[in-house]
Image (cartoon, rainbow, N blue to C red):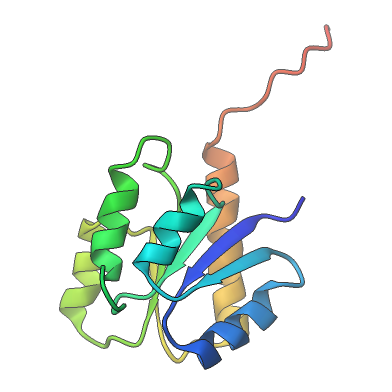
Length: 135
């Protein structure tokens, strides 16, 4: 089963490019704003959220804080992917609970490396399943 990624960005062209990069290896759900993210989370948690800082309605920082306050999502990896060049936004993203931060424009390999790294760390942090099998 492919890892599931929720991409929240209000730029359709950027969404299409990122989906094209991710979909060979990941199930990617593209959402345009925080309301769509909240609705999609009702169907189940993804393995990773890729989140723009500046969105209509709830912004990325508020959404990240909401994720961190939701039982079961406290350690969900959140990758901020934004066009903001503001150092303050970089710092705020981590204070809000973000796991990583990339600035647009981003290259395909840079994004894929970050995604794989975050998903690898997330899998490593999960407790191992004890399936039995004596010694």
